[in-house]
Length: 99
Image (cartoon, rainbow, N blue to C red; front, side):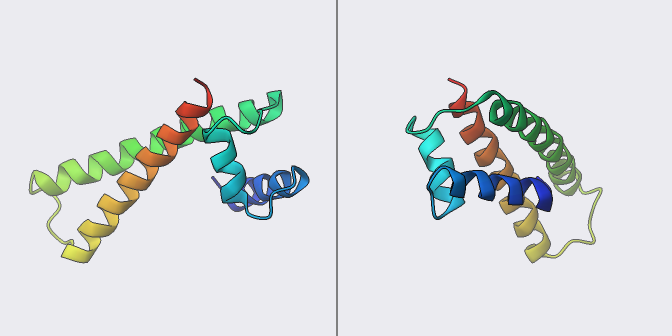
């Protein structure tokens, strides 16, 4: 998600009466808010982008584990792992909105 998309989501959250966009997101996850057609389209695009980012992170992780990428510090590895988990979690939350 780029800065513009995040700003648009925050604006929609405020329009829907939420002070914090994270609360708006949680309302979707728990079925307390409805998705309109535009939001559904945007979430599908975001989910697709998350899939691409997850794939890139998995390739990095594989390269590190296979010993092909050795110039990383322990902190670098931790950042990659945290990013991978964050992408997976966000994609999971978006998937939950469609079920």
